[in-house]
Image (tube, rainbow, N blue to C red; front, top):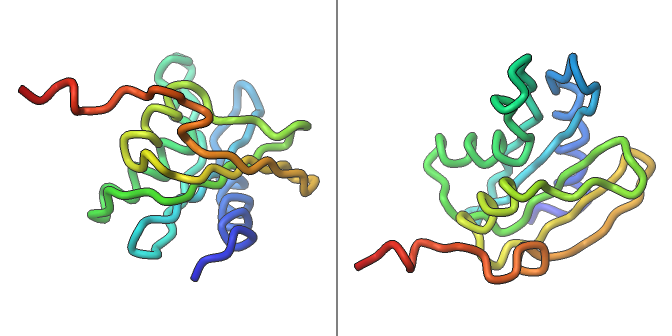
Length: 132
């Protein structure tokens, strides 16, 4: 079983690989899937800012590329106080892969906030409205 601390540590380690030459705002994320596997990601900036990819979406993309589609927990770590919460786009992507996912936001100083994706994205958009 993967502990919260291990998930946070995985996010902390991958944060060091973030490509953030413009904002210098490095973010690491780790996702735990329903199979018990952990996937990590960091933010990747681009000079054309809208093309920047957040750490959460990078981690989820890695999980999907490995054949995983169900996220049960996400840890995100930043060097901010309070810890930075996932952006709106990341909230929607997390919701897509785990409507009941737990979310941990942590700082390098050891502060953390535990919540859920439903608390962060009440009434999230899901595929049920697309099915006819």
